Length: 518
Image 1 (cartoon, helix red, strand yellow):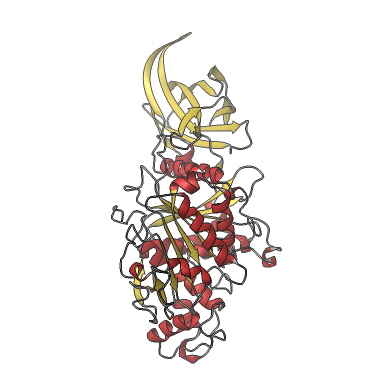
Image 2 (cartoon, one colour):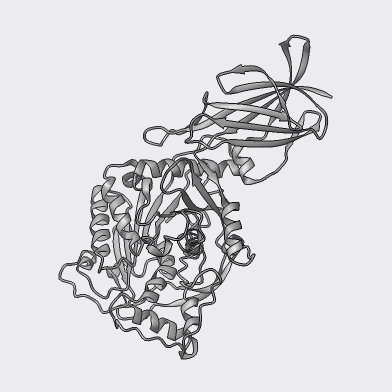
């Protein structure tokens, strides 16, 4: 039997006002309990509130359970399990990402201590990290797996995908046809679903974490995507853990087949049923796949809306705080127990009516450190003109560009062949409006990364142009587009979302997969 003084410290991430010097600090607002083989141990020393020491004797294979209960309901309780291996060594009972994010590996030293009747003993230091977020990926995966007949939905979403992706350049000339190429893309990212503590919207946030963080460990880059308003279709689905919220408003945006759904839907000149086992929409955006197909490596963050609201994600400082907490959590899962650095370059994007939410965020956070200081790119994915989403995101992003300097970028990807907003993208007001499909200004078409001087561009690919692209891949493809060159086609809407983001990432200043930046 070996004598031990097991010392438990509880830390939380404290956020500085500008989020440039966020650091871990000991907290006094937590209760600590420790059990050996499920038998509670009595503390022998308490210092600094929640720094607690327990005097115990251990034999090899004894189990240690540490439970930390925060006083503040804005934090989640934590539990860590360890096994004593003998000779002062401990190992985790479970080497899960949640365990690594919650507790650092214990450190044991042999010290002479002045505790009565105990001349010398092992002292083992445990550090617990409280957090206002909780990793619920396993819970989300289990719900979706049950809905999909036992399939590993999250595992499939993290897998390489063989599909048709937008080529470069997406449109080679005005009046041309979008170009696609077939490739197998590995997203190189792990899906993580986070629940936020307290009564808050969003309650659930879908994210990805780069599988290799060698180039992002100091300043995490990423993308925040805002998906469309949630209609009455979701009313019967419990928020946020109903299957419709988890899939239709959540992880289906992380699974992608590029142009392939519409190719299979209309192959050979007739309609075929959707093959998706989860829903009938086939509206996958494939954010991590498109990120990788565009040659970029960065985190992806998407809140699960409650109706038309992203709740506190509309507050720039709250969003900034969440991203720091997410970054700190991710670093700890990779056993990086150090103060997280300030965030790197970030982008924000909206799809469909999500552009209206994004416009509200940009307009409501003028001067905010995150929106005006960290976000450097804004993307509008097919904002509908009929709801004024195209006007709203165009005006809001233009004002956002005008508020700052440096390398800021704004791009719109749309089915619309013409809109008054597009006049802003012309190199000269006297330039004639080009026939679709097109890129404005012309100088933004041929370069992989937009030159510093090209701060904004629009890419127009009407549904008929997308159909022509599909016909180039499958001569038997046939689909009627009742709106002609006009926008508004639902499947064209999805294709813009599912494939054009690759082009946005190719032109992005986010870090490349090889570690460089444009």
